[in-house]
Length: 298
Image (tube, rainbow, N blue to C red; front, top):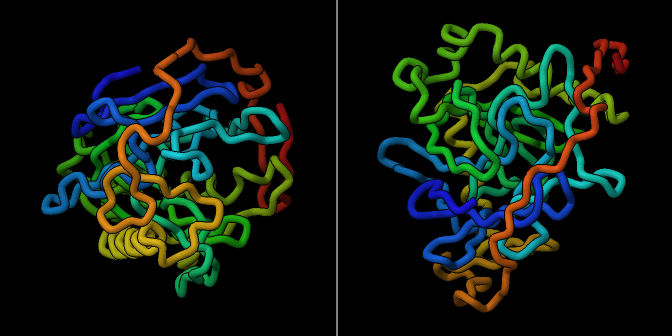
């Protein structure tokens, strides 16, 4: 997997998808870079385009994430009870209902309590939902524009979900703000809000809540939140905010005390393997009754 994803950045895959060995690193000019810190947030700031790292393509279940604890922050599959984690199918959906990922160079600081949600940040890059019709691939970098934002409070933590659209989507020129989504994709936002509130209930978690009385906020507000998380990332990468267990090694951030020379850290060579089979249990639908919050396997 060495295809060009954007700006001369290519992917280095190690291991098979759906396993604990699976990793995707990013590299530029043959040098591994950090997904979290070296990939720029802005694809074209003048045009309002941002770089989105795709972790989980639409209709898939593998819970892949930019890994904070590994140098260069490769994409890895999350672990649950010692096994690869998969998100359940919440009826009537199959896996994730959008291309799901994150904006690089952003940080939801757990030391900051949002005045809009009343909750601390979740210690991750800000999450992104890309609602276009093109199904992405794991690790792809999409150029997207911001449409709006959902103020999810996930297990008592602020977990913003930025609603975006791929620059190559056929409706790119028609959908420009959150109000346009219901016009061109009726029902999508409502289904999104329901999914985000209940998708952790089958794991025994409480129902999530959404700020602003459940209403998605517009493009202007969303952009201000993204830029705020970008500023908080700057404080992390320049050493002002303690990094705790977050790996901040990078090759390109000027003034960062964590910047290193190419070649200092070794990363295994490209070794992609065919995806491992997924247990058939993840083909089953779960029915979640709200407000009773009961999940029943079909």
